[in-house]
Length: 262
Image 1: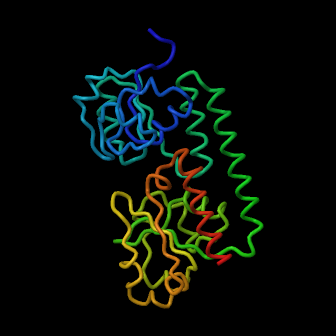
Image 2: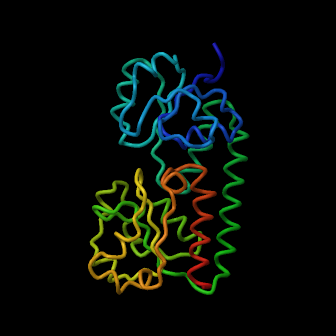
Image 3: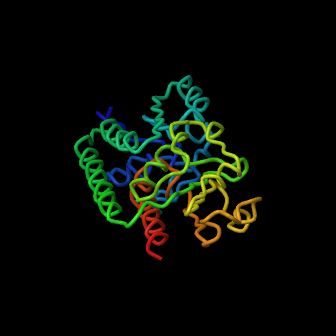
């Protein structure tokens, strides 16, 4: 028996991405159907959506470690545990917890040193970006729209990345709410807080900017008047893993910079 897991199933993408960035992608045998990074991971067996899994496919892969994410996969994890599989379920909701997840994944597979170096490198890049953003002439008000109906404000790691990128989230009091239903906001509340930048990312469907701009009363919002309504693909910002801390936050910074220097 190997000292560390060699046949790993990842039920969400961020752990797959982490393993590949650590140079350990050959240990991954099963992935989520939503996996896009890295491209070669898409050749692995697809065994799950976000709230469902193909237990027969997972069993056929004979995994020695299964990695899951959040309360939404709790039932899947429980069934797999009852089947005798070792399951580790992460629930990272902040930038610090994403970095911790990377370090824990590394430790689980005997690559703690590499994982710590990777997380430390990401921390340094985020700090550099924070310093760069601090040189902007001002911090624009930002509404991050995680869903359109009902209207949901950004989860904690997204709001933190908005701040690192140089923006000011308009609903800071909601960031610690882990469930989407607890971050629902009214369209009038957004009008009252008058964001200068609207960034939308609707998981699983493309953003329709015209649907945003025609909401009642939104024609008076600064972002709508100036045409500052943009999309960041959910794969880059709504998956709590390395991509959000690199490509996601860079896209946010570019948008913030565009708004304040235009």
